[in-house]
Length: 289
Image: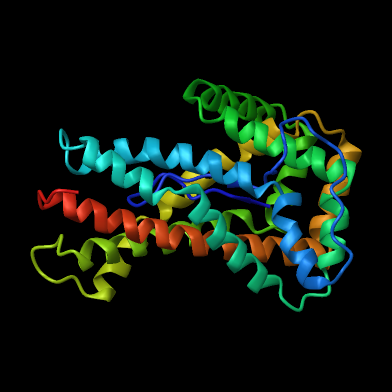
């Protein structure tokens, strides 16, 4: 259950399931028993979504400076920085996520099973490990070390590599991440076009062609980030614990929550990316943000 929109024109985003509790906490967070609606509303806290969005906010603000260097060097003053901070408003992102997540799971018979797994000691431990690894990878040195470590695992043909591949395939992590990145990049182009960044009008089919042209790079970056991340996050898990997580991912409940998470994060990032496009176009035109 991991989503990371790779480094691309529009975004540098990373998402994993993460908690609204302190790092290291592994206590069970039971769902409210008073109905499916209340259970669904409780799930984002069980899944540690709040802290994940805080990590995304940190990444997004850092990416704003990087994007400025690429698109309008020397013009990333206080106005631009303030706009980026506004776009990456954690409360707004969380509200948007919750609404889309609830809609995706509405009527699902799997809600109780989802809460039972992720509210368990193992579920909370997995989520905490994912979030801790996600934060660690904000450091480029840690990310590079994770890449080298996973490369050594592959060269040594460690059994854990095959287990991680199975996990990625079961949750469709590469394809779903790539599609999320494509959607975000299209939204970025749309935002640019709305504010008149292009000298000539860019039709939708041309935007799609530009976005799809970057698909191979997005796929490569997704794979190169995803497997080192998983290897780092799950190092403390025993083979038995990882198999239990795999078994849940194979279940109807695991598939349901995975689909709901991707739908919810897509809803968040399409809006963020379009807003970034609008802001970038405004800056490129020299208007006061």
